[in-house]
Length: 283
Ligand code: CAA
Image 1 (tube, helix red, strand yellow):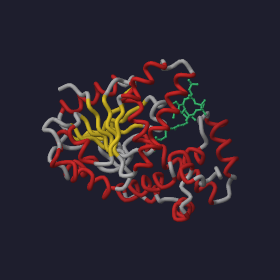
Image 2 (cartoon, protein in one colour):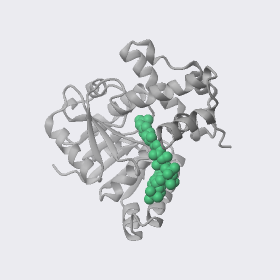
Image 3 (cartoon, rainbow, N blue to C red):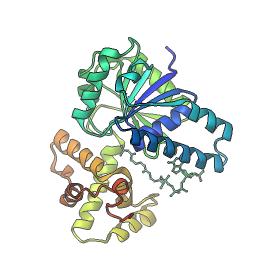
């Protein structure tokens, strides 16, 4: 089965990045969001990021124009049901994701593959709420999607091999590299990365170092491209907290306890770059 039409649910930083890379690779993309403003913002972000690639000689102006022409938007979720592949990239809340899949299911084509870009939630559990657990997979992109090479592929307990092979081919067609992860809380990247970020927040909370000295230490001392607190702001503190909660609940180990300071920042609405305030002030 050939995948040509891709429906993306959610036009936030992940959904817009996913629409960006699929359209550049030649797929027809239908991007869905409940907010018209969110869709407009996503289109301008995609345009800006593609222009950056043009100015660095990575993409031609013609390819950029053709890719933008392959992206359409809709505020009606069920419009995307008639795609060959659906990628859900909505907010990292299980109830929200389940509601999306439940609304989509009655309208899907028989062959549609359903995926979630969840960074931590059980694929088996999400799949069980659909009519096609064998055609359901975790499809986890990294942020910023146009730059990061990796895509995690996560099979639920019922995912069949043709579905896995189809997604492997899609990842190759995007020029990215797939890593297979088992369906355990937070898979591979976030199982390792987000507890490190949480530890950096504890390091701040306990007064071991300042925001700048913690980030500088990890950049210069461990060669990380971004310090852990800067990275937390980039990912979104709400997403980091949601992932820590999934690890804490799913693995029942106190080593995954979210740092109280991370909880407090999220309660304050200081979610990082997207709210212009997190460990750094972007206002
Ligand atoms: N779209 C297109 N291109 C982009 C881009 C975007 N959104 N953002 C950056 N770029 C490109 C730039 O054009 C530049 O291209 P060249 O190499 O051709 O010059 C390149 O990426 C580097 O960008 P900059 O020079 O502007 O900035 P930088 O050197 O500071 O790199 C960064 C920026 C790539 C984001 C780098 O800081 C980095 O790799 N940070 C770590 C990112 C990371 O760890 N991501 C994973 C987060 S975890 C996750 O995503 C999983 C989850 O579920 C939470």
